[in-house]
Image (cartoon, rainbow, N blue to C red; front, side):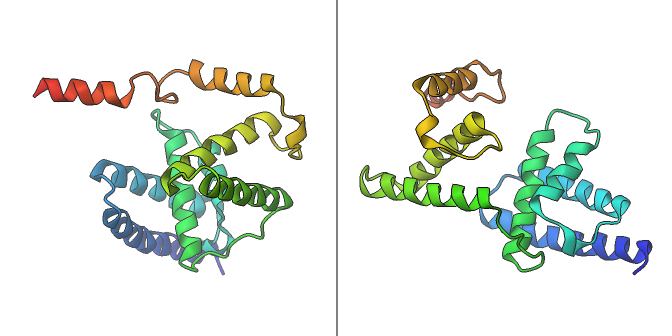
Length: 194
């Protein structure tokens, strides 16, 4: 297949799938501006795939993120664009358009930990599914912070590791830290403004 054939196939396929994805996002009540950002990110991904001669069947969430991270990005929404293309490619995997990459040993270990942790929160603590999801996001970020790409050894975690992680979360500047204005304060401000 020639480069021009790959380019037209990749661009056309991604544009058609992007339209389907937008319908799905609308069904999930995403805002108009959020959907526009997703579309811009997907269009940029399509352009990068064409310029790199990357076919749709070679795409993975990691490759999509790497393509965006390697390019110059105008504006401050680069990380969100990376998140958006990862979600889009994950959607393509669920639709069977893109093959799911074989999980690595690290991902298998992390999946086992997640299952055990969620089971504990569900059975022992009685938390809701939404709260369990939030708890796992923090636990996952902590594991990345503490171990990075190294093998996870839960016995090696110290109280100092947890303190360092929490300090890192609370000292980051907005928009990366959402504790600068608690939701109840925003709500109270909005209510009194009426």
